[in-house]
Image 1 (cartoon, rainbow, N blue to C red):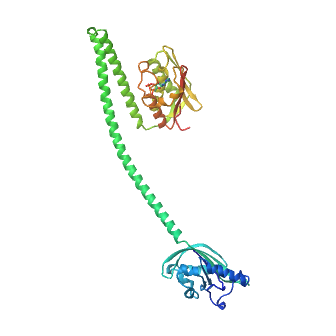
Image 2 (image 1 turned 60 degrees about the vertical axis):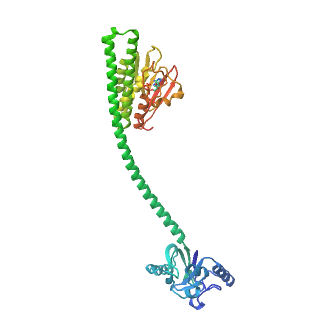
Length: 400
Ligand code: ADP
């Protein structure tokens, strides 16, 4: 609903007698005046005018519908009948501005209907001048914004409700996460103690098998000795698997404490162990390479990658391994058996093995653990390989 106040004494528009106010200069002649009057009268909008004393001088049917007063009741009354008691000070301020020749644009306020119901309106009020340029009244356009106001309030309420629900949800999620973490903690403790006991028992079996073989082999035939050997080897494999699983479980909740590490020195240290373990493994390390990493976790990464580089070679061929840094990524390169590039993602999943256990010892946990450790650092690992030509494992220790 639009409400406009015009200081106009036009035909057809309910208005004060001519002597009570002047005609506006904007309406040139009688035909124009009657056209304007027709528009105003037939408009669905409420159109009202007042003089500079704040007395209503015209009142159309739209105004009747909106405010509930008929023209007879409204014309000649002060415009303050439309203003709630706690907003009466608005009218003098509006009149003051009008007298200074200022406009009031989109002034959002509350007005009253005849039955006292409040109405949200947005007012635009402009001064009207006579032929001499003197301000004689005001034209006012106002919009009934009750619906928008209600919609805005409903929106605000919904947002507030949503915010409250979010807060509640976050608290509930935090509580449940806390409970779950406690359960995970208990389960981890349980897993550790079982794995620990299991490892002790397996070691016991392996040691007994070795003692049996050492001290009582003369009581066993060829087949018995073979079975004893296989029992001892299976036991060792099982013990290694439990060790790897324990290491994998440990890295899951390990906190990363980064510091500057002499990467070359650490790689050399790990390589010496690998060269002792694997026959004919030659490792060449780039000098003066440093890394920002958790030293214990970086060692675990190097141990796994260097061990694999020495391990996965064909027959009795020596292993040639190079280690260094290139384009911001660390690398461990071998000239071993390699693998098809289609497996270059799968090998980082737990228990994914491409080569037979009998020929190459392993549990399939190592690379999964390496990936987890590097991701905890914010880095990543990837591999390039070709069967028969060798593999290169690249990794970073921070987001690139
Ligand atoms: P594993 O204990 O079997 O060595 P890993 O998780 O370390 O387990 O490696 C997963 C699989 O990826 C290995 O079983 C092997 O098939 C393949 N792989 C890892 N490193 C190499 C490498 N340097 N050359 C060829 N294959 C490799």
